[in-house]
Length: 96
Image 1 (cartoon, rainbow, N blue to C red):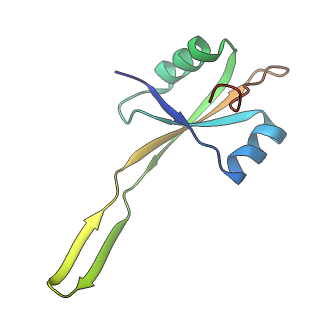
Image 2 (image 1 turned 135 degrees about the horizontal axis):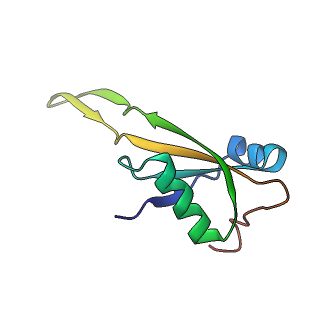
């Protein structure tokens, strides 16, 4: 079971990483805070101070087509915001 799926690189996440030393990741929905902390420390070699998690609900959409009404939804995901110890950082752009 892979805990870290991918880093979240948006304008809000980038600003949060520059100002508050907090990095955002999309993680497995069954992972808890302790597992996320160990996975980030092992993958990037940094010390994690705090982990916050967010469960994002799926978006539901309805389309009206020629053949009838189509219902659909996106997948539910879990986000983790990881705050690092002062003085440490993760360079997400060099690992791509």
